[in-house]
Length: 178
Image (cartoon, rainbow, N blue to C red; front, side, top):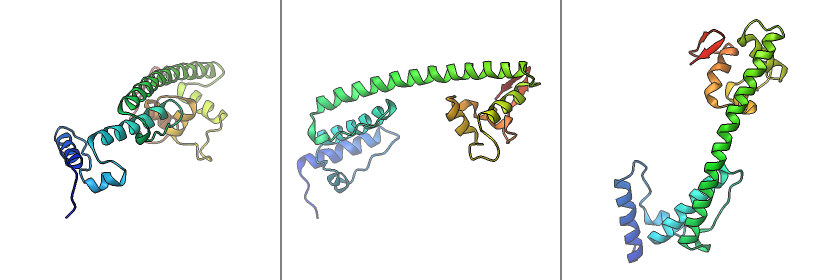
């Protein structure tokens, strides 16, 4: 039988208690956490903060990896606050860019209609073809096209419809409705 320190027993109780109040369950095996160098509640909290820092910094354009043993809990909380705030700003900017890209694409579709496409579906097909998205290429996938055009993925169904793939989509007055 393994002998655990008081700190480890407190960690186990902390994890079990948190699992009761959460839909996401955390491993409560102390051996598991010992493999990560986590032996008490503070170590665990610091480790969790480093995970958040890594994910939040990725939203800002690059993952920052932090060793929880090299920083105090307060330092990690401050870093976490900073990267979460920056990630929030980055997400707002990304959403704004997606809306602008959708507006640009609509203008491009309208211009293509003026140049001879008889409807929006044909215009979008011509645009995709001109941009190199053809059935012969692997890029003929709606999610990838949305990614390349900087569009929100809610437009995937529109792209699928234009590509004559199955999806539930209604067209009315040149507009697609999901």
